[in-house]
Image (cartoon, rainbow, N blue to C red):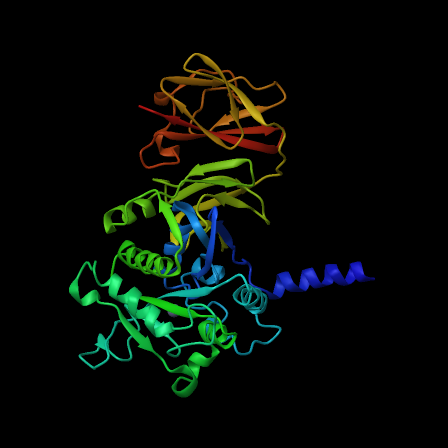
Length: 430
Ligand SMILES: [Zn+2]
């Protein structure tokens, strides 16, 4: 009986809840110290607020203290670039209905916020305009949110870091030492939530401070474009908080707008269903006849914001709100029939792992077992159905079928009768 209930519950939760849940990345230094929780992506149309924590996950190493990062709290909204696909998640922390699609996410993040190990919480946003204490114009005024450290009140009863205003002031002062433009100046915005701001009483940070947890929102400005400039400021702010908390780290790039731009432009590769791969840098906007399953396709890569989003008739590879490629699916029965594909590359024997990219200078041929059929996409030879054991050079393949705009990456697909077994991608180096 209980098992039936479990299954029913799973069915119900999968049909009523959000499609994607957030992920929590824990980075612990070898020396114990304070723990910072960074939450990004609560509003899906604020990309600075989820690409910055994504860079924290992939490019930072903590040496002292701990950093917990959630880059994609509202993942369904992030990959659809909407503020809140199921309503504004940041207004669901005082009360949420059980049948709300965000219910599970809000319940789970509350548990992490109240975890006694967490010392301080940052909730990241891109806000409109530039916050100023006095009205200057439509963009610079007290109602704007951009370029501000938001606090709900001056202090909170907490053993550590309770002096919210003082900490925010120190961070803002530090931020203001390195501005790309003078008007990007950071300010402290105290919403005086308990007394004055009814809407903010429903928010994540107000929930946190009512649990006596120090919490801040960092708002970069939506008016600052392009994306990397917002990410630069978000990272500077987060580093400022880490400094206040005695958390130490290393990162594998220099924190300048230029290198943040470079870091963001490298998406790495995506592996789909453990049998199919594509590079994401320079990938074509459309990939046709792509082997996929009708349901439950899994995508993996280095980027925590990577997702495969099903739309009408096709699938989009997204990194956050950035569309990298649309796949038109070729639905075939799938099975992992083999681990490696024997090949000859530039005259040498090579066992290529399924779902890997291999470099080729001159030519390649596959040497699969006779029960497999090889299809090199873009290659054809009259009266040949199985392209196994044929020496193929770059000029033998129709460049129109490349996976990349540079026209150097091509798919080798492996089949057993009508079953798709997997893919190896060849990358011609010249
Ligand atoms: Zn926001």
